[in-house]
Each structure stands twice: as C-alpha cells, then as structure tokens.
Amino acid sequence: MRFSRHGHVPIISVPLAALSAFLLLLAFGGRATASPATASSFPRLRSLGPEDPLFVQQQAGVAEAYAAMGSGSRIPDLTLYEYLVPKGADLFALAARLSLPYETVATLNGLDRSTSPIEGRILLVSSTPGVFVPERTRSDLDLILACRPNRDAIRILVGGRALWFFPGASFTQEERSLFIGRLFRFPLPTATVTSGFGPRLSPITGRISNHPGIDLGAPAGTSVYAAREGRILYSGFDAQLGEHLIVGHEGGWSTVYGHLSQRLVSLNDRVDSGMVIGRVGSTGQSTGPHLHFEVRNGGEAHDPGLFVPRTQR
Image 1: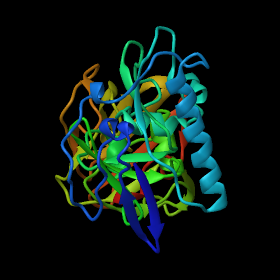
Image 2: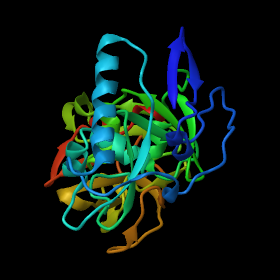
Image 3: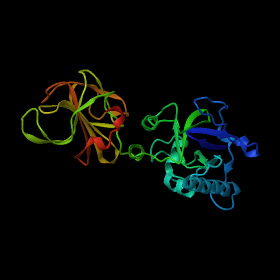
C-alpha cells in the first residue's frame, strides 16, 4: 500500500505483491472501495525480536517512514500487522518496543485512555507513525479527534471501522490530556464563558475576589453533563452555590456544578461521562441562569480552561 501527495491530494497505489492480500485498499474523498477486514486478515507478529522476520520488516518500515517524513520524501507502504499482547505488557512499553508513538497504537485500536487493558488482546500494529481518527465516534477522545480537518488524511477500512489516517501526526495537548486521564468533557451542550477563573470583580459583593471556577451562561433548564465518570461526593444546597453537585474522579480529581435548578443524582451515585446529572439554574448567589463549574485536584481549584476542550465553548 503506497500513498503520496501531489499538492494536497493523497494519491494511492496498491502494489500487486503478496502482501497486498493483507492490506486494505485506501480511499480518499470519502469513498470507500474495500470490504472490511478482520484481525485475522493481517500477518501476525509472533514476537518482538530479531527472530521474527515480520517484526524485522515492521521495524524497517517504521524506520523508512520516519526517514521519509524527515526528508519530505514519499511516504512508504503502510502495512498493518496484528500482535497478541502477552501478560504484563502496557501500552507505553509496547509502543516503545514497536518504535511507534503510543497514540498510533492507541488510535488504531480504539483505546481511549492510557489505562485501557491490552493484556491478551490482539492489537493491530502499523508500519507508519500517525493518528487514526474514526468516522463513527464512540468515546470522548473520538469526539475531540473528530475535530481535526481531514483534508490531508487518508480514509481506510479496518475490521469494519472507517478511519482517517493522518501520517506523522501526534496528539494535540487536549487529546493527550484526555488520553492520560486529566481532561474533562464540556459540562453543557454549548455555552458562553461569562466569567473566568481567578481574581475578578464579584457581581454579588462588588469587591475583588478569587473565582475558583468558570461561569457558563446557558438557558435555565439546560442539561448539565458529568465531565467525567465518577461518584457523587456531594448533592445538596448552600447559600453561595445554591443547588450543587460535586463529582469525585480517579486520581484525586473532582468537579463542581453550581447554581442548578435541579439535581438529578444523589449522594454516592455512580455516573458516566456525559450523563445528565442536573439542570442549569440560578440558585444561591447568582445574577441569572448559568453553571458554575470547577475542576479540583486534592481539593485545590485549577483553571477548568486547562482541562476542558475548547471546541464546545
């Protein structure tokens, strides 16, 4: 499988060698021209050492791809292999052994976080570094990846999944943060930031005070989403935040949702990322309908703008 670029248009050619039986025909311009393949359609790496000629071939392909990208030459054949992951392996060590970025292995196999289990799984392995973006989103990471413009990508079909391949690409800061478990999804369908994080002139007291979160203007009754999976640490009312919720997450993280008109979950409930947990309101010290949103770690407030995708703000 070969692809090159003349201007901005990917030009694909499929070699007629025996290896082409293991490859999927690439399509561009949104037209799929190949049948889906199963994992067994790809050559199997038996080991990750010099005793396996397929591993030697995969390593040579990766080295050739890096050299081509560094020199601006035509990118070599993209070959996909499969590998049965043994016990004790983790994604980062596996990617390093394959001489590939971890995001290449992760996105090719639909792994949406660094802690996704891989032991005993048959994973696909690429000969070319890059990022694979699914057409059909299934996770928060997919949603963020899908924001990439695909004009310089190549469309492939793998195991019934349509993917856009971005040769040589890496995760953005937001994608990386989400993958390693530090990024939170946007807590509203859409909103305008009406007050940022940090020192501000309080609309209630008229004095400068520290604002530990951000205020998101939205109509009363708008659905409020859990920014990540977790457990309800607090569900109640106080004079300042009004009706509000606190969700605890792995790693000592928590998120706060204030001034709600309704709380739809109770103390100790488990919630999934994107689950509707409340409704926008104007309870407590509030001048109008909005969501007060905080991100904390170890009880310390951090600027949510560093952890929430910009695409919905």
